Each structure stands twice: as C-alpha cells, then as structure tokens.
Image (cartoon, rainbow over all chains, first blue to last red; front, side, top):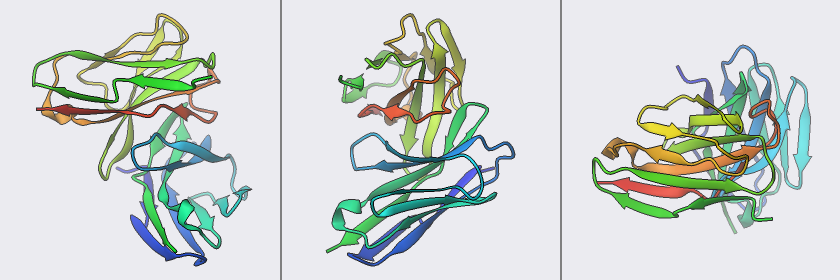
Length: 108
Length: 115
C-alpha cells in the first residue's frame, strides 16, 4: 500500500499561471514531511520540511502547507526556471518514504 | 566542500557481474543512505547507516550489501547483478544521527544498466 501519493503526475503551466501540487500520505506517526526539487539528470535538492499540521513555509515563488492528511506545494506566478520534478517524502521511524513526484513544465 | 560525491556516473554490467558504487561526503554527516529511483516509483531506500560501523536495511535491500568503516564513505555493493537492478542510484547524507530527521543532501547519482 502506497504511503505517499502525489498528484498530478505532470503539470504544464504558462509563465505566471499559479497552481498547486498535492501530496497525500497515510503514515500514522508522521515525524516530518519533506519537499525536494529534482532537475533532469541530477539528485534531489531540499526545499522544505514541515513537522506539524498547520505549518507553512515559503521560498521565493514556492509555499508549502501541511494538514493531517496531505501537503500542498503552491507555485505562485511560476517562471520557466521552476520547471522540475517536485518530490514529496514523509518521515516515519527515521526513514523517508518518497512519492513518485510531479513533473512541472512552465512555458514562457 | 564537495558535498556528496558518487562514482561512477554511468555503468553497464552483464548479468552476474559484481561491482561497487562509491559514495563519499565531506560534511562530517552521521547519517548516510542509498536509494534507487525507477520511473513512476519514486525513490526507494536500499540501506542506511546512522554512523560508522552501523548499517541497516531499507525497503529494498535484496541483492545489495553495504558497510560503513568511516564517517565519510558508504559504498554499495551489487553481489550478482540482475536486469531488475537497472536503475539510477542516489547516495544521500544528513548531519543528524537520528536518521533522516533533517534534510538530506543527495549526490548526483549513478546510472546503472544491467544487460
């Protein structure tokens, strides 16, 4: 049974068109939820960690939020350089379980 | 400060061959881990280590061995390569000995093909 499910699988946006990515999880003892960005041919790069429901964090055009069942990554007025695959991971028993990712393409 | 380095970047093996994927970090991190990434499946944990001399299995450990003789190095050994091990392998490290509680720094990956 999948612990972490990300949707949609792919998202195509026009530059400036805001949108949200979803990460839903089923772990019972969540110790933290992580967002990473991965560019083609490279390793994931850390973006945010959220530890409790209601927590929010922002970085440039990205904002991550957390509820008891899911997390959202909001992309506001995206630019082409925001094109990447965004990975969500949940921490349980000191180990991370990753979702399959959402590939975002932003067209100029 | 090189961060997390992995060698080789690419490797092609024949079924049954063995090899070692190298991983090193220069950040004095306690926690190190190996993941494999397959299309549509996300990253899956193979083995991890919370410090020198301590290793444990992750989600998909079969066919892989690890050891951690120093803080800096965490090699992954494929004992007898199989086509199912064709994947991209990532090594990661974190400064906390409490496992992956803190952000992990990932290496650039090794793309392995087993024929």
